[in-house]
Image (cartoon, rainbow, N blue to C red; front, side, top):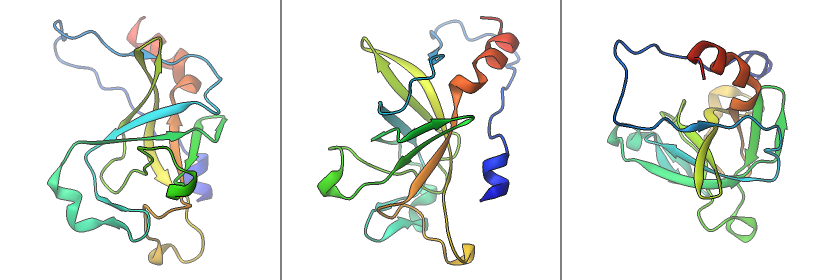
Length: 157
């Protein structure tokens, strides 16, 4: 977990030609993510909080989304916890295997802004026994605001 927490999980890809018919999503530049509701997108493994992710569903590539509340926004990471139904948002969720790099957005005045990228889940004990997607699991996302200057410097916005 220390290796994951000390690393960076982000990349920019240069396209061979410009995309002209789609407006790019705004990049979240503020450092006030804590407490905000994010919507997370992915196409990885599915499951539920009681039994966790079902790895047999990883290759279905079914687009999914869920919401969660940012618990902390420190340095290069955003974190949130997968709460059980009693304390959860109506569309509460956790990403699964295969969702890495999936976008998380915050809506500001009805407009989406990219705030995070799905990265990893915190595990304790024997890592070989880790089961992703259980209630109480903490997720780590790449915090886009901490890379804002780098992204805009490379992209030229």
